[in-house]
Every structure is written in structure tokens, then in C-alpha cells.
Length: 264
Image (cartoon, rainbow, N blue to C red; front, side, top):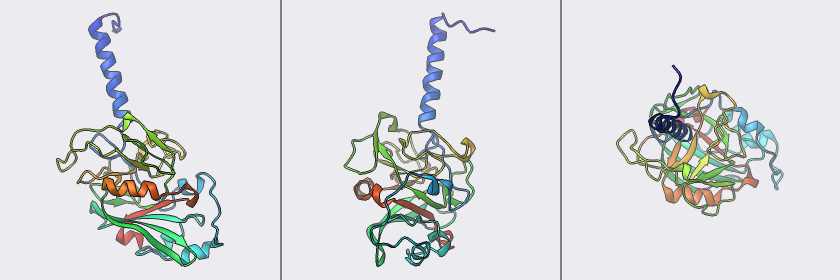
């Protein structure tokens, strides 16, 4: 039966439906039951190899063998090999267990002498059910792998990051998390993790190169004192420090996973 769009009550119902669908689309990220997430099928996701061009290292440490030889705490040769040779900043997120939703995060910077800790370690949360190599939409696990960090944004003004920053009211969130904790403020600051997303765009961009069923909207965002749907979350003071430290010219990546998986 055709819809009578001239009827005021019908028009209001249609408008409400459109607004509701739009809100769910914007909020289909990672921090609450209304948000969805994704994780990599393998440590070397295509986003690492296919992102924007980067500046060559200044100290000549550009060979793949050199990258493998520069050790990161708790990270094995297989995972090290997935770090681009041009990368000079690594955010290392080490989960407490394959099925755990707590982690530790630290920032490392590369020099001729190796990887040196530049910030952290900071306590963090990850996906409610832990970590996975083969995420599909809604499994509530965080990705294991190496992913570039190219874009940021948030509800609040740019604190001075060198990353492209999108300030938008669309980063607003309310409600409660898995443990009843308030979610307000979780997206005051976010850094997009380049799993199943198009780099060089706002974290709100809904492009999913691997398909919608593989999830997306994986961010580093403000911790709300509880597990996420797949993101990594740290305290607001720490994410502000991280935003100020990250430098696109250093081709930053995040290396993330549970401690056992990172050693491979």
C-alpha cells in the first residue's frame, strides 16, 4: 500500500526513521553496543602497504633486514617484518591475553641505535572478548597486526597534532558501556587505525575496502573505564600526549595484539 507522505504524522515518522538510520551509520564505530568494529585477517593488512607515500628515513636504516634487527619489547620477527621500513614511530599495544580486554600501550621512536621508548607505558582497554586474526563484524575482538596511523579527529578542538584532524559533533556519544560505565567523552579525541578504511580521510569515513562484513571504525580513543567493541582506549591525558607526539613524516603505525600473538 502506498505511503501517504502528505499526512503530517507520516512525514514525522519518515523523518524520525531517516534521522535514526543516519545516527546509527555515524556511530557504527567501536566504543559501545551501538558501535561495530573490525580486525585484520592477517598481521600484514593491505592498508600498511597501500597508504600514502612517506619520506625516507634520514639515517639510512632502510633495509628490510635492518627493520627486523631493531627489536621491540615482546615483538617477534614475523610481526617486526610487517613494520614498513619507512616507519620511525610505533605505538605498541600489548594485550594481557588472547581473551582479555585490558592492555598496555607505549610509544617507541626509531633511531640508528634501535627502538627507544618515547612515551608510556599506559594502561588501556581493547575489545570485550580480546583479540583475533580473523575478525568479522560484531565479534567484539580487536585486530592483531600492524596498521598505519594517518588521521585523527574528535568532538573537541585539535590539541595541536600534526595529523590531519577532523573536529565534528558527529563524534558525540552517550549511553553506557559493557560494564555500565558512561561513554560520554569517549570520542573527545580519536586516532583512526587503518584497518579496513581509506587513509587520508576523517575517522568518520565509512569506506570499507574489505567489505562491510569485515567491520571497521577501529580507533585509539579516550578510555571510558571498560572494554570496547574493538578499539584501543587510553586515558584522555595520554591520548592528547600521543596526538602531540605523532608525526606523519615518521610514518607512524600501531603494532597491536595479545602478548603471545605479538611474539610470532
